[in-house]
Amino acid sequence: MLCQVFPEQYQSQLAEKTQRLQDLIPSLHHLTVFASEPRHYRARAEFRIWHEGDETDYIMFDQETKQKVNIKQCPMAIESIADLMPKLMAEITANEVLRLRLFQVDFLATLSGDMLVTLIYRCGIEGNQAWLDSANRLKTTLPITHIIGRARKQKILLEQDFIIEKLHVDGKIFTYQQIENSFTQPNAGVAQKMLHWARKVSKGAAGDLIELYCGNGNFSIALSEFYNRVLATEISKTSVKSALFNIAANQVENVTVVKMAAEEISQALQGQEFTRLKEVDLASYHFETIFVDPPRSGLDNLTRKMVAEFERIIYISCNPETLAIDLIEIEKTHDIVESALFDQFPYTHHIESGVFLKRKAV
Image (cartoon, rainbow, N blue to C red; front, side, top):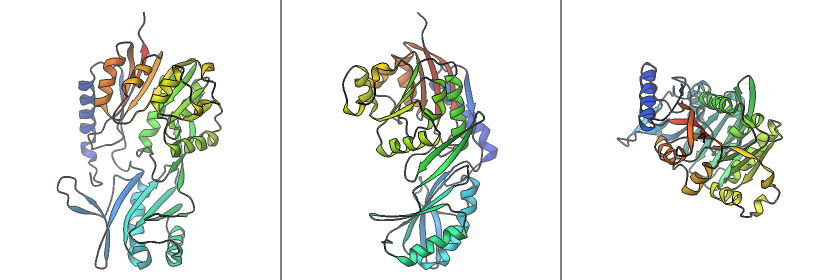
């Protein structure tokens, strides 16, 4: 999309997505559509850098033509990033130490005001005091909370590699660590709406919750008040560490995170023993609800079968095609009660959706 936005087309593109989702999954009931802001919605942006003579510019490559396109403005990015971009480029262009062999600039921002900028180089910067002094001056000159300098096998932190987001949902504030180079929801405004919907369908829940693919604990933490206990699983070591940070930051006491793949937790529930669960009394949990937010490939056969064994299912999907395939099997035992479309990625074909199911009445 090369940073463009088309506010006058926003509603029509959202209507097209809604129709496409309903055509793909005709059984969706009570579909709620959560719109994005039509401009300034992305809290994460990455740009290649192009040098030509005395000029340096942000660029992106057109996916169809493969041609580079200079980016002077990015109304797709949240305002803090959009405002910072030209100011940062002016500083880089005027400082040969910062400019020399700069290859890429990444921005990671939060609604709560933090800004992390990563400068990626084709040459080494470790031990370069001139670069370090220049980068530190950027932080005093511009509204940047933290800077990371990267080069091959080098990573310099000024002063840390994460920022703190505060999401406002249902009159509550949830605090989340967002680590550079790790997954974060790019559209923070819509992320708040996703948490609102998941909390809504969790009201009145009984028993415990098990969550697969929990990431940094984004949903686990926001849903914890509706369940007696939450067991959250995640395979990424970095995400598990971040989830533990976020659980402590939000003072949540009923969430346990374990580093396990979805297939492994399925085997554990069937009685197979795992060392990583030695401190978890799995038999003491009374799971009635399962929450899944799988990758684009959807659920594997084993996990899909496991999911169908729970009374209630909350399924967040980033790929409606694989969601439709998974629901063919899940709807044999469960009915769709509520569904949602979250427009995380305006002006693209991507659809993020949510489905809440309950076991069929006998």
